[in-house]
Length: 117
Image (cartoon, rainbow, N blue to C red):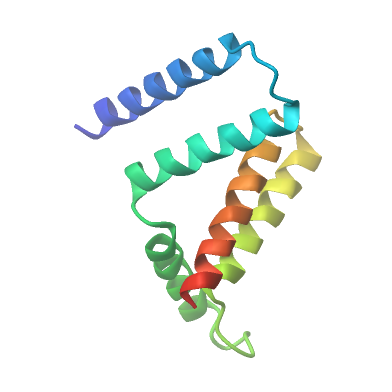
């Protein structure tokens, strides 16, 4: 059931966050952020599939919707940049702890998309 899946994913994410909060080691804040970005990126791939496939569907929709306005179609790597901009715009409105994690994740995803282009 879809709502059960959402609840299970939310519970799993809270559990992972609690484990991260309990970590006491010599990692810097930057290193912890990158470790968290790896965990989040891996979980998103498991949940939603490969980023390149997801972004390909998304840019296909955007390109169709804005075909008369775009000079050339957006690429999957372009979409990763849009997501970084969206995350930063949200952060300007309401700063939250996961913005740097998500930006690091989207940067990594952009590199993966560029590799596949």
